[in-house]
Length: 435
Image (tube, rainbow, N blue to C red; front, side, top):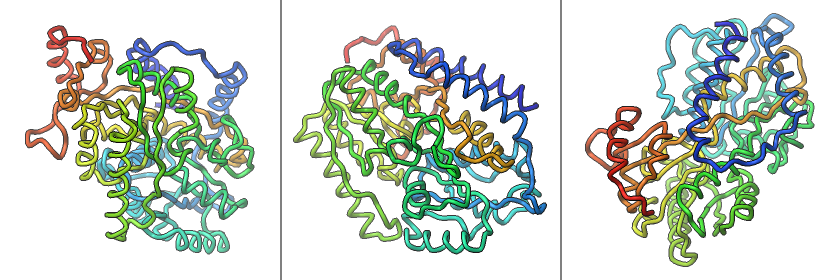
């Protein structure tokens, strides 16, 4: 399938996937200007002509450095589909399917796996330039990157998330290597990009999509008319707090906030134990002191899936619904629902097109960077039962996935998808509408 056909197919899929969710969301004015739309069209037009795989001017493969925070399934999934898209477009050649589960991929292990493969003549990966900041240590990562920068043996730095972007762009101030910042919630508020359409820095490209968080919060408020929602975060930009505060003012609810220190050394068992103790205490304070009636699980807070249910029980004991900012898998592990703010599979072509333009000679700062993926809804019906929430019929009809068990808690196997939708849908008419 050629690039143009794939782009048209992607647009059609977005429209089809988006329709059932949009039906339930209160319409909001489209904030994208006509100029933005023209720039987006120009991006795809340019990408179609310049996205062909290429080598470095000396004929050697480009080498990509990878910087992440720590093992986190959501970022692992983003990387998995980015790599798959590189293979689909010919930038790399894989001799076998990736031996990773996209829903539970360790990103650093994936990069190490690729570094050991012959990925072809266009793009290579490095075990040496492959980092988890919270595992390897920030100083170690910085020193190693500086050495690679001096040796000129890396051609692109791929940052997965806000903190890696801040380390490379703001703290290290790297100017002579193209930097891509992907899966950053709000790179504009973080100071990584001067605006949502172009970064304003010649060597920096960021994927921006902050508008989705306003719509996401509108959806959650429509689903459950809460008055005060709790949020715990370590970075206001990672948690998209600017957008959520704006939504609170516009829609008419309040936010009870707690800011805690992030986990800086995932290898330190004592530090990890202390981090989760502080996190649970923050959750309990929101329930007992702030009297919240809803909770938002913010990005990159619960990093260990085995701890999800223990932490969410703090809210479910008080019949408080839990919504998710990022991470489909949280719904599998017991969160009530997630209306996705990002889609790893649908966004991958956009990110690969951006990379292709950069490696074909475009300055990263000249590559258009705003792309909002189509949202989809997932609901955990068992969690709904836990809090006595009767899921509205329109949500049952619009949900992409309905989970009937809580992963890691229930002994019986989990089932999700259309078959469960049909079964639950039959019962929808029998359920009451009280919330």
